[in-house]
Length: 213
Image 1 (cartoon, helix red, strand yellow):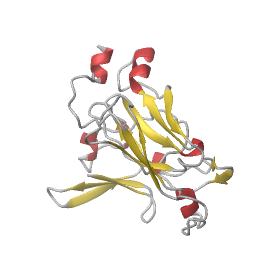
Image 2 (cartoon, one colour):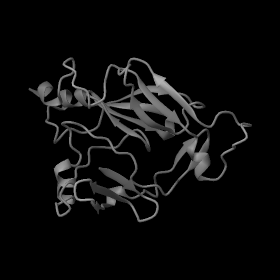
Image 3 (spheres, helix red, strand yellow):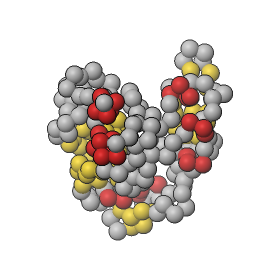
Image 4 (cartoon, rainbow, N blue to C red):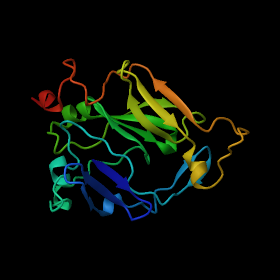
């Protein structure tokens, strides 16, 4: 099991082994916050000292191979790869069969990285593809402030669920709990995104390697 840590013990990726009841961690400069990563929500500029956060697993695509994480003595830095720059700062990440889903905090939106498209257009394998094609799936300046908690449904798996929480107001101590500024927490659904969780074994989806051929 992998856990991200960015508040108490510094930015790191923590691995817990259920079999041996032991844990270890990996650190890298890419896990730290960027002083130049300020963004605006509802006209207000924010620059929080928040580093590594969301984790997303894929059955085939590797940013850092899981076999590296399972070995506390593995060469983490040597196996790390920069995939690209997203549209905006993000919190939650989620992998489906067809792409990587993430919130875009500066746009009050949820995006999908069209990995299939980039693999085809760049003519490369998974180990070389770069993030280029980003598709907005939902956007709302009011109801999608700080999108988080992405998940596919169990019984309606082609729908993408999300939580929006106005976390920017919580982090700067200005979150109004009286309801005077409207809803702080929302659960929403994006209907028919044409994808499912990577954990499903559906024959209608091709693996990225099948597409490359």
